[in-house]
Image (spheres, rainbow over the protein chains, first blue to last red):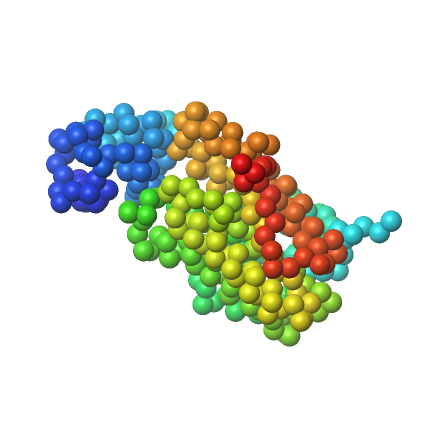
Length: 77
Length: 253
């Protein structure tokens, strides 16, 4: 989780982020940030997500859990 | 009437030959009579590609083109196995969709190594007497419309593919006295494993939006193979140092 939060802080242009922080509260949470998360999921978890999947996460913890489950979460290969 | 696309007796190296555009090029060139040396990092896909090709003296070489330093050795092995070359097609490529702010150096270095540094390492060998078979040669680099039009998340890929255009122009001038021509093909979005992987990150409306940018729809690998055959065969004998856009109309807007 710590490594994930560090990477998310980079993506969201923040010094630090917390697992209960809501994604929509970050000014940098936009389509490019979502692209970065999709790419991180691919390289770190070898899982492919769509922007729609990522947008379903409300908090950073939700996002972490989604990515950790890999493609079991969406049923995609 | 003679078949101007005939490649009988000519030897070509094709990278990325295991799948997608590279495989389609290999299949077409073999059907036109060429002898092929096929390069891919995935052995199973190479075996499958050869099984789907017309029979011939085709050789398989499992190699990761990120290892640019060893490409001279690869070409030496190819010449030792199958004789000197009449040309090559560099269709191998890699991509990572990531905004400039977040892409890591190791990611863009791999993209640059495979997509364009390998092209230089391969292409320069055609200037060597022990590698070039003579009698007219042709090099084709598969670039992309992303070399000519921007797209968010494609910075490293676009940079690598644009570099191919510069490489083709200068190498064309260096090799023209030897009879070797050098060109690029810039495809639009083509149905390949790379596109399918990318498309899994899109929802239905995004897929529709991207396809609608192509007035003729997404292409097939065979559309690019046809253009490559034109460039390497007699039909392309007065074409060098240029980019042939094959994009279903993407750049027409």
